Length: 322
Image (cartoon, rainbow, N blue to C red; front, top):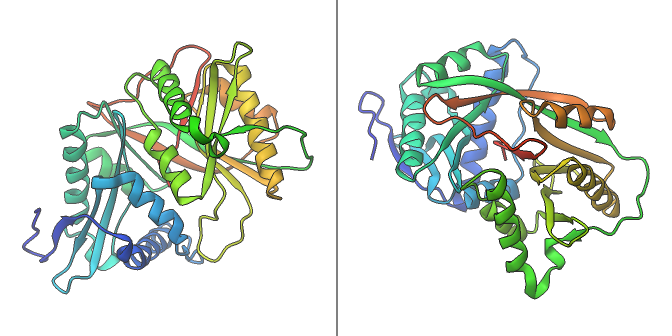
């Protein structure tokens, strides 16, 4: 239990689905306040879809942490995720009236310690690049600014005749398909494993996983996508790729085409993904295919726990947001 006696805040505790409403309130209030202080006074951050919170809690598992005030009200949270040995934190927020109390530092240090204890090789997070205050805050805790993560979107106009292979249709061979995805990921990024995310998405029925193969039948790539809207009360208007693993450029292109087909089959006309710009060739391939920049985040990693390098020609997008 990490106590902050001056402000009588206690935690961390592991939240449950009963905490979704309080999490949403703190999330909306904190990020709306952040935009206001950055000069965007007209921005009101909406509540997240409860299904997205359930996914975040499931994915974080024991790494989901909340802090409470003396009245038992939630005043801060940090969703800490570990995919094999790739660790990251997000979302995280402190209620506006409890900021500048030391709670933010406590939350980040708790996340770092939790990941270190479990052998994380990479420890990272993402923040808005225009928010100098946040960059300085994380830097003082040992994080180093890296490349941008650019959210790219493309409107879908045509209806491909593809019938992509999806994990949901694997039936009795589902575990074998998950094992194939794990082996491919670890061949490109040793000890990285997205099985938890693939499983949680399937169990919550908020998306699916697409697979593409080389001519010899060997798995060449997979893409985990969500179709449920991010914001509460919004319509289902886009397919979002959260994790993408491709052995080579051809597999990358075929995954994009398969995702487009899956979206159009659901009458969804927009696709988005978050591209780590350290993978410059993949970024340019997306731009050439008509994707346009929509949002940017700054990727930061703990100086002692950087990201791994990829083999030449491979593509791995790992979304450090929910």
